[in-house]
Image 1: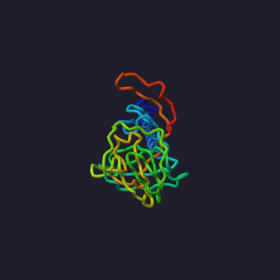
Image 2 (image 1 turned 45 degrees about the vertical axis):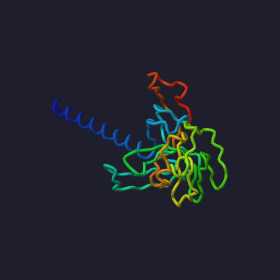
Image 3 (image 1 turned 90 degrees about the vertical axis):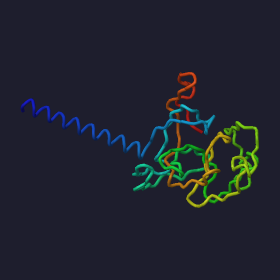
Image 4 (image 1 turned 90 degrees about the horizontal axis):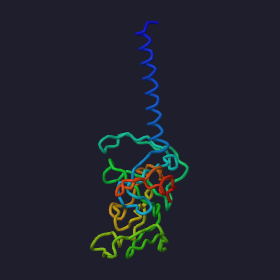
Length: 213
């Protein structure tokens, strides 16, 4: 075999290996697990700005999602192990702009009644114990001022969940844009694989590899 033919053969093998590798990564990313960086403080102190996390996409059902520029052309979700439950921290497509991904905590599922009274969450009339929640603003806003501190009651519709950030005074969540369709769920946050403190320009070693609850 000539050197030229040998080079072409090697190039074809290299391209084949590269293509298989890219497809494997895309399948894994789309159907098994995916990495995200936390960009905002809406889930503090559970998740900090600069945390890098993995989400489990198999739990609720892996999906094929084809879209461009915020337009979804094809979507199919395969069967999962279970539906989202209260307490799950979930990455999902922001229903107002599908090009963006949000992460919040599920506080209620379909059929449950959600109400916020003076910053306190009630589900089905029961006051919720939420040790992970923080409030940065001492003020309690009236209903006339918006839904942040006083909301509902609202019954979560079928095939929807109600999402709230743990940083309740600094979270754009279901209080503002309504219950989340389960079809927009991408996966459950499972652990941090890295964390970077932008203020100190140094890794947060105590956060790395910590499970997310």
